[in-house]
Length: 265
Image (cartoon, rainbow, N blue to C red; front, side, top):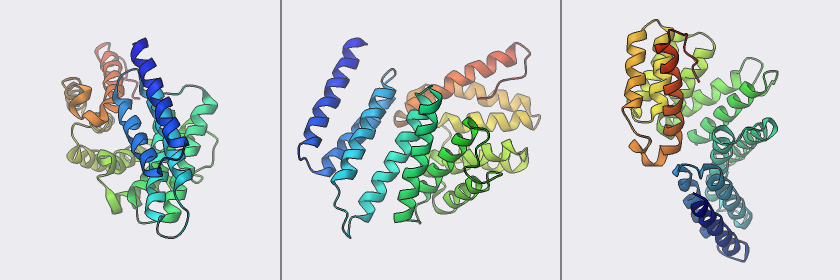
């Protein structure tokens, strides 16, 4: 593992040198995408995403800011929003660093929306980052007093691109409705997320949570067992996310098997 991590660090250094000394910004973007994809290797998630963020920032600095490059700028901001959120959510533990990661996710999504307000995925990542920021900092007013801004972002994302991030807008709208005890609407969106991407295991987990809250416990357990019947590589580009959900599912099922009220993550 040490040797693998060392090789990855050396790769990032080589890429950094190439991008820093005059390479085209498109090369930096491409290398950032490679590093971001590498997050699916277990044990290398944080290093890969930190490297990707650095490459995306270098690409951003290299894009000419004159007219005609708006789409490229928006795409880079979108990548930075996602990577900042996922690094904070999946890899970081320090309170201030996690909050900063979510804040960066919000800020980069804002910039993407300023350039292109018709991109549903940008609203999605802003909503996810904002909601996660509020969950971490309970007294925060970010996203509106009652989270109305978050709900509006997910509604926009659903209208424009409900299939982005494997049905992400429906998945997190279901979570939003669960948080407000609206299990009926939560069920609608959770089922839609599973319909879009059944093997993105977070969708199954959210649906299991909704079914449990509805009192449909045997159906909820079936969903959890479905998750454990799959490996994280059932979607290769979502192995990191699936791996985290498999771990959470094992803890949830352990609670259920021990006759405890499950701790849903």
